[in-house]
Each structure stands twice: as structure tokens, then as C-alpha cells.
Amino acid sequence: MFVLAIISILAVVTVPKYRAMTDYYHLQSSVQTVTTFIRYAKQRALDEHKANYVVITKSNNLVQVRNDPSLSLLEYQAKTLDSGVILLSSTNTIDNGVMSYVYFDNRGYLAQSNMASFTLKSSSNRTVKINIDLLGNVTTVWD
Image 1 (tube, rainbow, N blue to C red):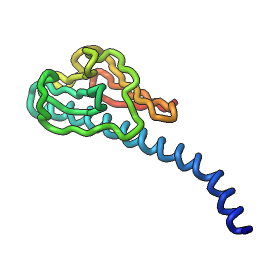
Image 2: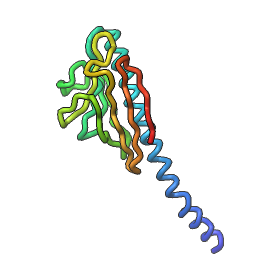
Image 3: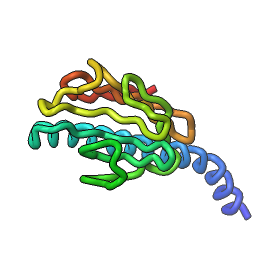
């Protein structure tokens, strides 16, 4: 009986911490996915000498690298954000209500402005802002 009481007390204490920890890891993995795709799109733009887009589709949280944002085909790579993570907002990106995207021109520069950002939010309401500067450098700001 005593052992059962100790196990139940430990469960009450550790389960909330475990959930918070898994939410953090889901958010961290999603941030890594988006930043990797941004760097990949910049590199492809430099290699191919043509524009490359990083597209985040809002309905299914799909992150993609494309040659043209209007195409429905997945041209290179695609990955969904981890469970519980959504695109909260985007700044200086092209947003048509269905998707948000940034693109790099044929020289590897961010084409639409000097800086753009995506903000991701986890199910525990923690947010991360992913900033992209004109040269395609990526920085993350955790709340």
C-alpha cells in the first residue's frame, strides 16, 4: 500500500513536467525543420540561379520548398510541423490566407523585403520567432 502511494505521488508530480518537456521538444523540432528548409531554399536558389520558395500551408502546417508557390506539386521536400505546433503569424512574408511564404531570388537574397519572420506556437502557448534577414541568415528568438 505504501509503495502504491509513493508511485501515485511521483506520477502526479512528473506527468505535467513530462507534457511540458514533450511540448518543448515538438516546438524545437518544428523550429529546426523551418530553419533547415529556409537554408535549403537559399542554397537551391544559389545553385540553380532561380527563385526558391519556403511555403508553410496553414491548413495542415506543411512546410515545403518549391520553385513556384502556386504549384500544388511538392517539388523538393515537404514536412509537417510536429503535433501541437502551428504557424501563429508571419511578418513581411507573402500571405494569401491559405499559405505564407518567403522566397530567395537567383542570387540567394531574400526577395520581398529586408527581413521576414515566422512565429510558431506550441500547444502549451510557448512561441518562437524565426527571423530571416536579407542575406538569408536565420535567427530564432524564444519567449
